[in-house]
Structures are given as C-alpha cells and as structure tokens.
Length: 200
Image (cartoon, rainbow, N blue to C red):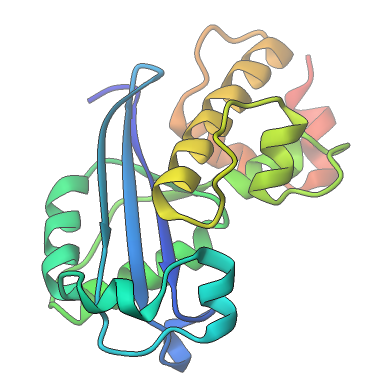
C-alpha cells in the first residue's frame, strides 16, 4: 500500500545475536497515510535468562518471560504481520540483526528494506543534544507517556518521530510528500552533503 510502513522495536537480552543474545519483546506499529492503524506486541520466552542490568533498564523480568509464548510462535506471527511492508526502526542495524537472526532459526527471512530513523535524525536535527530516541522525542515535543525501553512505547514514539521528520523535510525542501525512499536516501547521504543536497 502506498505511504505505508511498519515500525519495529525489539527488546533483547544483549547487544548482538552473534554473541548469543535473544529477543524478549517485540512490537510492530503499522502506519498508513500518516496514521498508526494497527499494532502487534508480545513478550517472548527465548529460553535464556535476562541479565540483571537489562531487567533494570527495561523492566522486563525473567518471571515475566517465563510465562510468555516461545520465540518461535511470536516470530511466526510477526513475520505474517509485517509481510512485505517496508520497515523502520530507530538504530535499524540493531533491530535488523535480531529480526534476521530470529527468523533464520525458523527458516524464514525478511527481504524488505529497513530504514533507520536514527540516521535520518542525525541529518535533519544536527543541533539536537544527541540522537537517542528519548532525547529526540523531548527535543521535538513529541507526545509520549514517559515509558521508554519497552517495545510498543518505543515503536510508537519512533513512528511519531518519523512522521515529524517527514513534515520537517517537506517544509525544508518544498515537497508536498516525502516518500519512504526519499527518507532512505537522506539517511545514506553524508552529513557534510546534507545542506547542499537537500536545501533549496
């Protein structure tokens, strides 16, 4: 569907599946024509323990995931939910690694692009204090309920940030509509070239 994308966010037991980290929660928010229209969210039980410092960060405990469905069930449902819709994530390289790793365990794959809202923000909001999701949400006065490091809350905030950036870019370069492909192109533009390439 035109003007449609899905924002993904994973919570995990560590920084990389390459060193044994697994996913403990996922959320996916579907955005169509500038509105959030559907949501998918689930805790999941990967069969490994969550380190205490990550429990403190996310609020997701080993007791919580012990009662959650297995990763295989959640990831099959997620794969069906996202289909072939273009994806967005904040720090997309992190989420893409976990998406690919979890799907590979099931003999599945995600073949669509995943655009990075962090990279776009680094180019659009170069004066922001930093480009963490929480900082950008406050920097742009984006609506939030104060919850961070939980998958659904972060996915919804990323969706709002993405839509905010689209509006700001449209105003900056005089376009009526900034497409997903334009945002991906901007994310891959060197920061030093942004002003001369993207300003009228």
